[in-house]
Image (cartoon, rainbow, N blue to C red; front, side, top):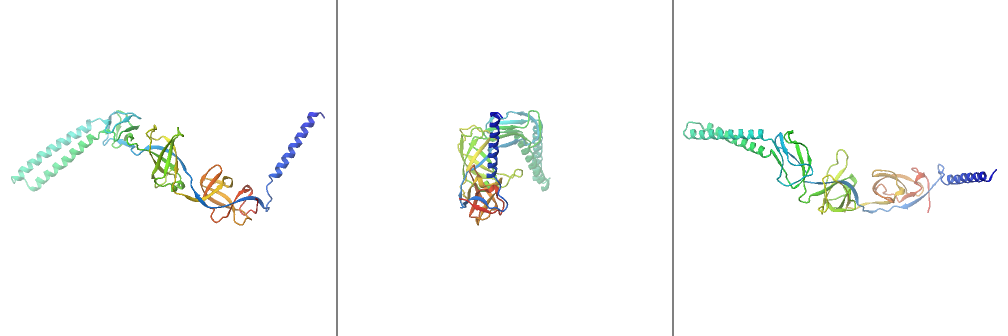
Length: 349
């Protein structure tokens, strides 16, 4: 047997011995055997942690603009992304039909006015009855209202900007037929520094947030740049699709940042309301899913009990427990991997 072969045999024997020792150390305890664990005293305290949420930038002045009457679009004077001024004409209809309606209303009003004046003279001469005179007066008032309606329709055959801002979306093109009330343009208003950030949160965090709580917001592309703000509105119903809630952050100094409606961002909200609970090691948490999880506790230091807990903020080293640990003096923080509900335990220092 040469020297190289002897070395290989000795090396393989050493590996087998090492594996055998490792298996002995990690051997699962026998059924009924007390499992060595470490515990920590549970003390309820005040938890305070910021809430992280994502969302989008928006303004309250976002408006869908449409024509009062239907017709053919003569001209859309703006494009998406273009800045507009309050009162600026943004789009117009072909006025042939609307103008014709106005002319008819004018002719009808003029005829009703002549009829009224004739009926008034005849009534004064006792030729016409009081009823005939009153009917002519009513007809004149109806014609006047029809003329007002036609003039109103002519005015709103143009779309004008309601605020200084930008065109967000353009829905139609020149020559396209549109019906009454169909969206033509979507604009926003930005002249009054009205930028807001709408963040989505779950029901647990929503209940912790109060109006007036401070917050900071960062852009998705500039996470090192923070915009201060405060909570000004909260949704009062969950989104029917996602089940989430939203909160609105009023931005305090957005002028120095180039924002666009719908831009993604992240917010950090600092609730003033404090939460009572427990701060436990992350290693003690089992089977966490969403805001729920399980831990092992003991009240007699002889057996383990598996309990469900409601979770708050989770970090790399600790977890906030909001509820579920009431009336339990000790939390098992080591040895949980071998435990079942009611497993016998042996406390180690």
